[in-house]
Amino acid sequence: MLFTDTPAGENSLSYLASGGASAGAILGDGTVGLAFRMSRVTISKGTDFGIKVVITSKFNGSTYTMDNIVKGYDSGGFKFDANGYQITIGDPIFQVAVGAIAYVAGNRTGSVLISDAEISSNSVLLTFTREDGSYPDVELAVAPNNFYVDILYLTSE
Image 1 (cartoon, rainbow, N blue to C red):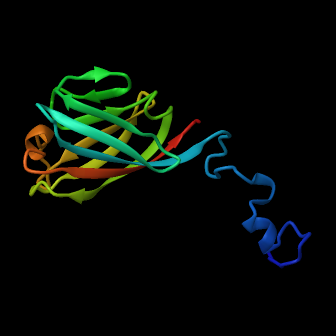
Image 2 (cartoon, rainbow, N blue to C red):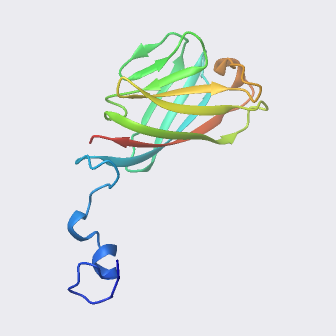
């Protein structure tokens, strides 16, 4: 395909840069109505017990704060599994999720933590591991200090 920079041409750089006929659409699988979002999930020691989670928006994302979360907590779109190494964030905190990528963006715990994100029942499931593949107890890992995970996720608005 030849690209020219003529204002009226459908193959012009101006037309393509403006989004052309698909302005505002996320291209990929062709599904209409998807939105990219990015949030930061900061996990620290709870004020009195458990963990504290603060979710802030980095781009078109969600916000949420919850303190003193114990293992096994499951309410209002947030779940801290009894296993201690998985956190699920769903609707209404994150709208219906269809895809996600996550990475540990900052770690002050003194332990190596690796995050993995997958979609489970339209929610973002974060699973934490150590570099040897074993599972950490997140509550114990954050006792000395916090860590945070950036999540880029795709929702069906």
